[in-house]
Length: 403
Ligand SMILES: Cc1ncc(COP(=O)(O)O)c(C=O)c1O
Image (cartoon, rainbow, N blue to C red; front, top):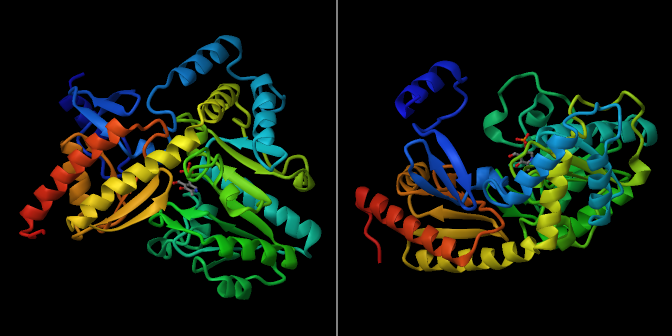
């Protein structure tokens, strides 16, 4: 099928849930994607922080080949070899003991909240409420839409799941006021991802840990976006010198393969049989891929690269800020956002794409960069060149004169 026919088929047969551009992606390798017209794109979005090792990495290919030749599916009612190895590896490299495996971030977060409610029933007189953050993002299932503090979702798919309150980030007094005897958990991202790359202060997290301990409330870190090396350590919680009670991972842990995990301590191994499960829990292909991806991140010290390259990106962005193209730069490691000088961020994203660079706007002001952890300086040079060229074109288009 030619690209035009394929696009026609796409519009006829794929549910219209997104503003898909008229492009069909066909191939990926390292930092690059190719479409069916053989256009090449430098990918600084990484599928929204997913392709941690870049596109079609050898380790994923090999893990899939080997595992698919051995065992594709056993059954969620049996342990399988890669599942045990992966759970053991995650326990060794984190402060947690036990894992539940799923396929998406939302699924891992659902598991986390079910576990928190179980804890509330068992140990806190039926406490069921969850405190989350305004501008936080936790997924698109009904419960996760309820947990998500996105204003534009407030009226959607009513009625929501009950029991959620939202407070502002870095406001410990608001958090203290929101936690009561019916609260079983606080859930937050250590750096708001979809919320525009906004960090939690060190002191805030330190105090939050204390408040949770004093009130017998579980602390859940949603590290779906920040986890697996992205912020400069394997997990972002390490940089706050605390241990959450529960952590969820997805995106980067599968490097592009659908995989998520909820990790917790052995004291919270409290689900009763039948409370939690799923057809693809511990699916052997996903387990083999996850283990290979996380091993690669650890063995190649890709979190160090994330920290180093993140600094390089921010330095280069500073130059664009000095020219007046950018007004603010935020983020840690390879989780970076910047504000464009004029409210035309979606136009900038589109122009960058037609110039061969994939980035993504959060809103009309903010652009996010979430490149693979393998990014190198030559990719950053190219990204800045394409970005600057595109920004200049947009600024001229709107008659904005720069210094
Ligand atoms: C912090 C965070 N949590 C949860 C999710 C939901 O993950 P998924 O889309 O895999 O369900 C996302 C997705 O963007 C996320 O960024």
